[in-house]
Structures are given as C-alpha cells and as structure tokens.
Figure 1 (cartoon, helix red, strand yellow):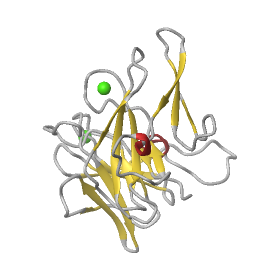
Figure 2 (spheres, helix red, strand yellow):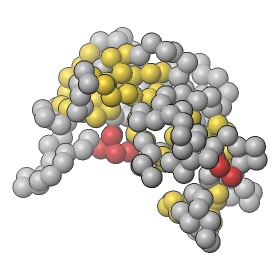
Figure 3 (cartoon, rainbow, N blue to C red):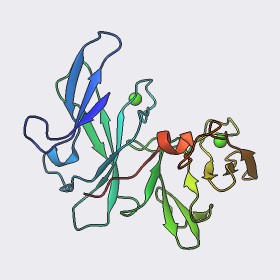
Figure 4 (cartoon, helix red, strand yellow):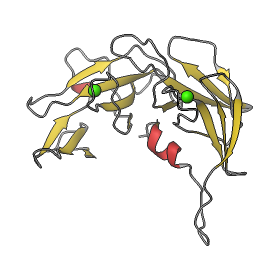
Length: 214
Ligand SMILES: [Ca+2]
Ligand SMILES: [Ca+2]
C-alpha cells in the first residue's frame, strides 16, 4: 500500500493498494476533504498503519486529520476499503486532541462505541512531560519526559494497549500496564553495532501518527 498526492492533477490523498488475494492494484480516494458536506479543508492529514478499528477481521485506513488550516482541532478518520466497491466509506469521529498532538494507534478500551471501537489516544508534549488524553476524557495521564517517544504496544498481553514511551537516552521502554496500572521498565533493543544517528523505537514508527506541516 502506498499513499499518493496530486493524483491526476488533484491535490487529494489516495491510497494505492495491491490486494494479496487477487494481485489487483487499485487507487482509493481517502481524503476527508472529498466527502460531501465535509468540515475538512486542511491537507495536513497523517496516515497510520493498517488497523482493524471495527474488529471485523479486515484492516481499515486510519488517519489523524486537521480540520482546517487555521484550526487547532484534529479528528480521527477511518476508511473502510472494499475491493468490490469503487469508493471507500469514510467515518470521522468527533474532534479530539489538538494540532501538534501525536495519535497512538491501538485498542484502548474494552467496551468502545460505534465508529470508534478501539477508542483514540493522543499524546501532547509539554515542557515538563507527556500528557496522554483518552477519547472523551479531558483529564490526561502524565507519563513520559520531554524527548520520550510514545509507542504503540501491549506489554502485558491483555489485548488492551499500554501507555508506554521509549526513552532514547537510556534505550528503555517505560510503560503503565493496562491490566493493573503498575509501571514497568524494560530494555529496548540497541541499534546494530556501528550504527549512528537518531534511535527510534519501532513501535513509534509503526503505531503513531502526526501530520507533517505544510
Ligand atoms: Ca475492519
Ligand atoms: Ca495491555
């Protein structure tokens, strides 16, 4: 799967998908601005890796989109891709988080509502640390120091994601287990010998989304 911009001269985001079942490749318009009556007008849209948000066994395209170029409001948008239909179905959730937040993909609740069945978690950086905001709860959980990287991970294996960060300075993962709320401190894999440059936790790369500034 690859994302395209300026497809056929249009400034819209498309997903180019090659289906493993048929080996067919097709392009799907996955841009909230293209929906009828859309409240979206900003091209700043972050794309997450595939996630099965409605728990039907098939992945959807997950986005974290800025509503307008002048707004700080952000919302999660989920696109259901059906190989047999020409257009995907897009579902937007109520705005949550603000521009600059990082959305962390994962299953965050046990009894979520329609359209947001895994719930949504965003992380806001402050000068003193990271604040984690679960959809619908205005009171954040403070976890992580400035410079820590939020990661998408289920450490205790209870199917719900854990609040967790990778700390580059120590190369450790610090998490709050969702099963009992207890903190854990684990070593992360070190980079290969001789490697240089920025160290990124794989969970950060794969499971968090933030739009690039345009
Ligand atoms: Ca699904
Ligand atoms: Ca867990």
